[in-house]
Length: 478
Ligand code: PXG
Image (tube, rainbow, N blue to C red; front, side, top):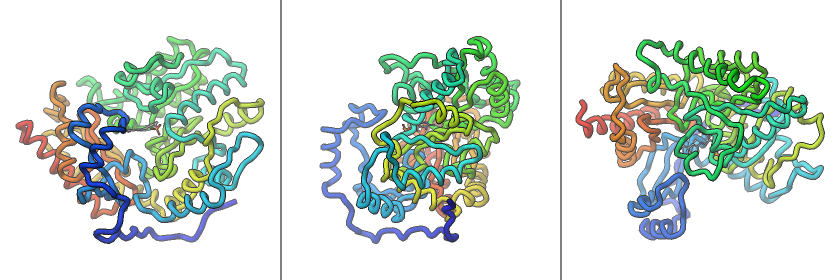
């Protein structure tokens, strides 16, 4: 079945009229007091946050957010890398509403299924590259990566290769915050606070050229050497013990780290040589971020499993998924029961919203526009603006995602001393300038909604420049 509908030109939804009613019912001070009294935020120092007070976001439209004080903020992060179609799309709201009326919930555990999950699976099979024709659903990126561990383990068991248990991932990779997701990730500050880690997960170094290459290496030589660490690690552990390698095609939360062109082909070669499954974590890279449907297509490699979330529903409702290569799907399908599932696997409302979202991305040619028009415009604008900036050492990215490396001496790749929280300083200037730009250590990250216009890109980059200029001035560099 094909879902191709008539071509629809993208029309930015009209902004709500000034003073339009929102759900805001309390003053900012009241909201802050209640938030401090009852709400624990994720990844936050709650003592410090409660003293300073959170910013209360009350509505959003297109690429803009409004806070409870009436400030209009440009969202350079698409929420948390997820609102790919932008805020305020009625098609998604209507899909959720209609599905809630028709069939708000039913499970797919016990010989039942339902139209939204069927439509979504067929649509994903159409949009994902061959040979991805089967999908398993969950509620988040973390759960998708947990699911991958289960599928990988089950796959090797069906092949009679029971010793293949070790999964290799990377330092400073991010794969979520469940126990398995957190273990797969390479964030020391997450590991430190975990009760215990999942067994059989080991890490190799990341392909972070600016921060970790020596002065004689080219980006290509460095990336190749980092990929070859995988081969060394596999030999050390024994290929008969290694089940899979997992990586984000580009690291998102770790700083929008784009490996040089030599990296992924070498990783793929090594995985094939040692019969190790290759897993692409597409939670951030999937659904158009780089201008391709999936970021592994941008880098030109072929994974065995793909994890997805975020852009799958543009963040309107939670949903995650795993795409299985035909070979893996066949092994799971033909070998009896797979003992894994979640109450909300393939939730009908989430699936209906995902279908509406993917149709918008496809039919309004949003992904193509990122590839041929707004993506190149954004990347050029960043390079024109920051190439010779006194504290910008690297501009990484493709399509509508970018990482700006802040550095004390860009030319020699000298970073700011540990004591200088340069990212935090810059983020505060962004905040005051009504711009959302995320800091990851000393890198500033941008990942706006994929529907951003050129005019809005101009505004985004100009606000980012103001914040980075102000940071340089505060640090006494000009
Ligand atoms: N994989 C990747 C590559 C991610 O970026 C996850 C898995 C986990 O997804 P869930 O849905 O379980 O959160 C992520 C999530 C940040 C930030 O500050 C990034 C994420 C989540 C929260 C904050 O950059 N990425």
